[in-house]
Image (cartoon, rainbow, N blue to C red; front, side):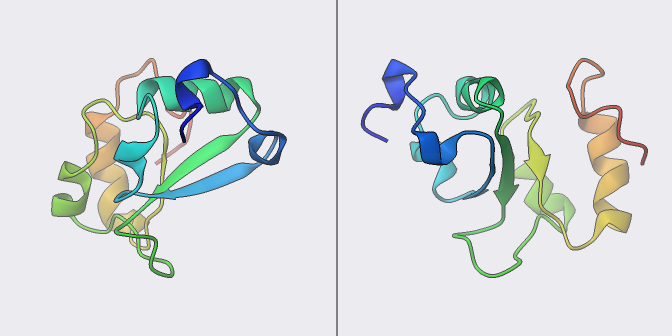
Length: 103
């Protein structure tokens, strides 16, 4: 995390998928937009998971979604897509890369 401001992405973080707990995400340099852009350029998908990374804890309620940064355009881990998809669809700007997902 100490060199994140330089734009450096370690090889272990390239061409992969990162699951980032919401309690840790704010400490990542450039969170959310610059960090997401840097990971996208490295061929890496970023998934935000609920809490501190407890097993399969997702964004499953309206209150959970309200904790996301405004305009968050990354992937959201949820165990209740039936509840969350309509909320995300109405909150997601049409210019984000994931709006092609059919809800």
